Structures are given as structure tokens and as C-alpha cells.
Image (cartoon, rainbow, N blue to C red):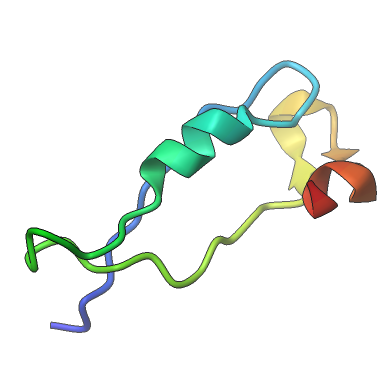
Length: 62
């Protein structure tokens, strides 16, 4: 109804994630209109399963 769909990436041992995997999850909305175009990436910045680590700002800027 809202045209919203989520996709997840695997968290690595240090709390970061593979940026190539993230890029592969980005949808451009074509040629199939049934897949909504990616407009927002949300990152949970503290990972309780990884000891409450906070992602480094340099990683988030990358």
C-alpha cells in the first residue's frame, strides 16, 4: 500500500557490514515496477549482539 519494502544485510563480527552487499540491495525501480526504488538506508548504530559497538563515523561516511 505504501510502496515500502525492506532488505537486510549481514552484520560482520566487528558490527560493520559488507558495503558491496549493501550496494547489491539497492533497487532502482526498473525494469520491474513491482519493486520499489530505494530511497532510504537506515543503519542501527549500536549492535547489542556485537557487545554494544558503535559504528565508526569513517565507516558510515564511506
